[in-house]
Length: 264
Image (tube, rainbow, N blue to C red; front, side, top):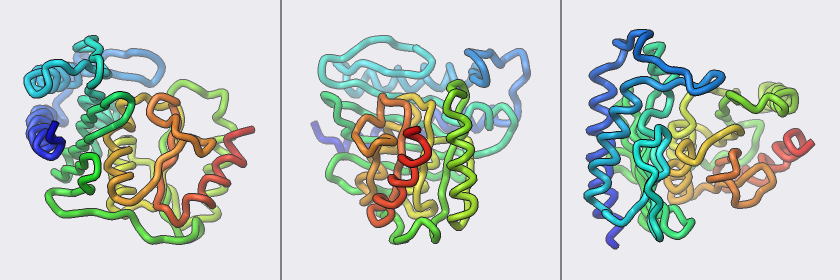
C-alpha cells in the first residue's frame, strides 16, 4: 500500500469535513447538542462530519475497520483500522472558539502508519506517513530543539471524567507553571500534539484520553523527530488513556517530572 498517496487522499477528506464544520461554526443551537456524559458533548455536526469521513474512507481501503468517536461504523478490520475524531474540540466548537480539528489515523496491525490533523481555524493541515516525514501545508516540519524544561512552552489538557488523579495533576500543573516558560490549554489534544511536532510547543501531556484524540498526532510527532510515551515512559499511549509528546532533548527530564507527580 502506498501510504503517501493514501495520505494525500485523506487530506482531501479531512478538508471536506473541515469545510462542513466551518460552515456551521458559531451557528449551533442548544437543541443540536447532546451530552454523552459528564463534560462530554456531541453535536449534529460531529455526527455529520464522521458520516462523511467514514463514507469516503470506506472507498479508499474497503477492508479497513473503524475506531470512530461517534460510532458511525463499528466494523473491525483484520489488519487495517481507521481511528477517527471527526471534530476534536467539540466544546470549543459549541462556544464558537478555536482550535477545532479533524483527526484521522490509519492503524496497521497495532502500528500507526499515517495521520492527518486538519485544524480548521487557521486552515492548517498537519500530516505524516510512516518513514515519510511530517508536514504542515506541504512544508516539512520538525520538533523544537529546546533542551531544558525551564525554557519550554508546555501544553496540556484537563481531564473530563477521571478526577481521582486530579490532585496530582494540579500539583504537576503548579510545578510547570513555576518551572517553565508557561503552560497552555487549547482544548484539542490533536492540535496540541501537532503543535509540538512543528515546534510551537516543546512538550505536551494529558490523561483521560481516547485513541482518536492522539493517534494521528502521534505519528506526525514521531515523524517530525519527537517522541511519544505514556506516563511511565512505555508505548501504551494510543489505548492507555495518557500521553506525553516532546522533542528528544527534553524528553528524559520531562518524563521524570511526569513520573514524579503522576505515578503516585
